[in-house]
Amino acid sequence: MPDCTPMGGNFPVETYNCYNKVTKERRNITQGACQDLRDANRDWSWEPCYCCCSCFAWGTRITVAPDTYRIVQTIGLGDPVLTTRVEVVGGKPQLTWVSRAVTFSDGMAPAPHQPAVLLQYGDQGELAVTLDQPMLLANGMLKAADRLTTDDQLVDREGRPVPLHAVILGKYTIGFHSLTTQDFGQDVSAEWFLEANGVIAGDHMVLAMQDDDTVAARFVKDHHDLPRLGSKAYAEGRKDCSGNALLTRQAREIANEAFLSMDELINGTSPVPYGSTPYITQKQAANVAVNGTYRSMGQTFLVHDFEYLAKVFNAFFPKINFYLAWEDTHPNMFAFQAYGQSTVYVSGQLLRLEGMFKQGLAFLMAQGVARFESASYTNDSGLVCTGLADYFGANQILQTVFYGSYGTWVNPGFEQIKKLFALIDEANLIGHEMCSTPSIPCRLESIEAAIIGMPLPACAGGPVPYSLKLESAKWTTREGATAVEASFSHRLDLIAAKDVANYRLTHQHGAPEGNVQIPLALVQLDINDPSRLWIIVDGHVSGKDPVTLTVRDLYADNGSTLDPEASSVTVGGKP
Image (cartoon, rainbow, N blue to C red):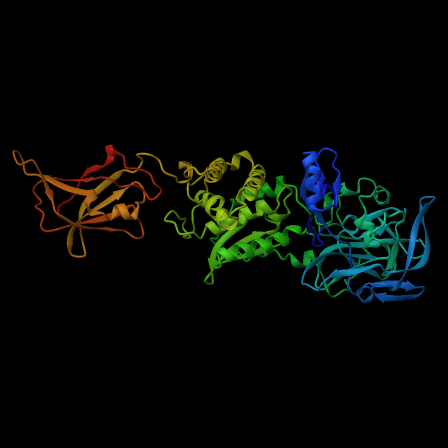
């Protein structure tokens, strides 16, 4: 695949080959042989690459002899099929049909909702294929199915043009199958084509070898740069395009019952309940939607990474459910608790964002997991605050899941998150509330602090020296006993706050006795507001003299320390 970048929607498979970063040469050799090359030249390295296949939907009719066809998935090795080479004469394709034996026959097992393109052409023609399936055009050139438009014309068995009436992105609920009559072990000196449902398409080798100079020359100019069906660029300037379907007036009702159009699948509703905690705000998501560049809905390679990562995360965090809504076009992620289930909901649009790959996806999922960690610093829904979730996700969650390979995930993942945040307009970078909506610079600072092992920054709720203040105290009763109700500027660390030795109540009887300490029994915290507590007095207190409350060795739940200048107040009211 060009530049080894995952493309298309037909189950790309990660493999490895030996790559020279200077010459761009790739060699399909063993890892040991590659290491020998690297020992002699440091420009060589062992790197991942992706490959994928072009396929016909099950049920496609492949011509095997004049006026005779077989269903594609029933054709096996050695079976004869009718094939043709293509020569372009006077700007038109010339076809020469011969019978050849099948040398490769394989495909994808039936599975729900596999991405596909459905083509409608001629009077009754209809064909469902994978997105990268090469189709022959009336000018003798090739286009992948997801780059076709209704301005193109396909070709029939006689080489005559066939008008295209519909190009529709959708999902196919059963299998796909590939065929070729060419030898994988030899160089491709000529390409062979098949007749599929009455139009001409390249066999599997035509796509597999499209980077070969001979085969690449068959495709239309700048083929890799053409907009893909399901992308914003594809729909631009066309009134007859929804983005996922391009239709002429001759388009018909879809006959293939196993095919569901993407527009049918997108119904405008969302399973996200009211009050869910978003990854970015609504305005920020709107900026990303407008400023971002997106892959088409048919390019689903990150779907398989999501499914894999969900299994990995579930191994460590089995109580969290991950849900991908591929058809959701609003780029955001949500965490919520509903029906007794903790759920991380991911929009497919985030996965389709150009520049987002599996490391960034893992970063997002880790932040979603962190929302459900045990922490006192939470939002109104009881989920961990945003900056702290960024911090937990980038540190302890990813460390847990990718122990031993943390750096290979967190560093590229952070770069991908930076690119996501860079799509937000300057006006929406600011924060409005420390817990739920810290600023984007603050969130980036939190993530970076997590990666390098520094404390959570103050802008996200991290510790601030001497920021904890004793604000007020007043006499009250608690469970029938005399008590002092004290309020602090921050929520308190529970362990230090419950230690009665950290509190002193004194009153002055006048000289020469000086200050007299009042015996204390215990301390109780307000479970709903840990910035408030009650100090229970042991015995009777005279109401004649003023009483002072002094505290020590307390700190906030985020680690902020006590301000010595704000550690003492006069107790108001009367005991």
